[in-house]
Image (tube, rainbow, N blue to C red; front, side):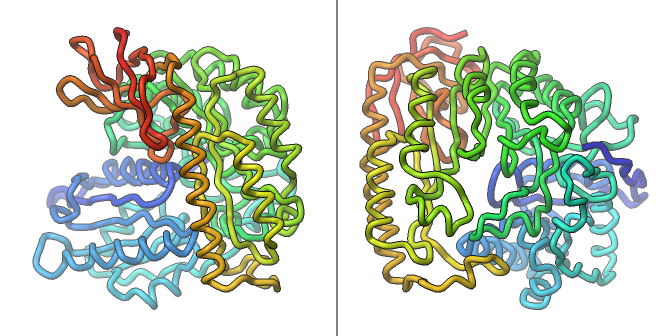
Length: 492
């Protein structure tokens, strides 16, 4: 979504201050960090990789679940320790934890010099300079960001709201910071690898009873296709070979632009972008995964037949309490539909174990579904109350020991099942995107393997000259858990 916000263009005469960005959490946060990096560089800061070498350390936090919050706080404390005797003068918290808790986080974590919310992003360079100058920043008071845009999706316009990863800046930016023509997204790549996340949308209109994300990420807002394509072309020119489309709910893309099937139209255009050989879509809601979208994901050249389906559970009763839809029959029917069109498709999901009111029968329903589903990867999370969610007030809570036991049980089952699924892939022909090379072997990902969390493929018998960013055709010869080993048969 376009916005009229522009970049501060003043550069201090004393020379650039240095800044390091530390990113936690999901790929959406990676995009946000690269927006911040672009803004800071344009504002006169010099980016450095090592936090110990930076005047300012900016930690892009995650506020999704309790473990992620703890990791964010620990990272901020570690960064604060650098102030004791090194270059570092200031530590600043941004991202979801900062947006979600604002002044409460600032009060509980005085080691951080400032806690900035999403609305601070457009002026991030000026904010950091004022902090370095010793000015006190007053952290924002958190609010439900769903209330910042109209209830009707069709009436939403993000020009008056800071939506990280969507912002379009002035047309006179340097060509290496943004798409080299047309509207320019403020972005500076922090990782030179051959894969890059690309935001389709932000926010969510669903009301899952366990999830707080909509309250601090806001209502669902699609980026305009022209903006997505412009940024994709820029990424392709930067050497990116795989685009990883990210959002809180990719199946809703286009609904606020008047076309719920816009993703089906956009995907072939993205796959045709010069330099890009593979496009991957993340986070699909099963109840919204329509047949036309399945067909495009399964059959479009250059689009990975990859289905990141947010099942969360399989028991119809538990799903209703979660304020979600589905049951084993509908989920298995969707998987059958996918595999009829793309027999080798990759399927991953996440499940929550120990939700309030979950019975032994519900647990068995989930386990039976996981056995029947033949998923490539499953993330297993034990339920925990999240501030401000409906489920936090539910009765029927399981005690911590029971949740831990159930989580461990499902985790063991999933490890066995996904290892079996990987073993089934022995004998398959795969195209592997090379992400690292070490002598006669390389490591990368096949089409069914998403970045970071879905396992990798180790390539052996490499032909000469294989480089990072190549797509190498290979034959799967072995598996180790969810990881594969494949023999290369030449590369293009």
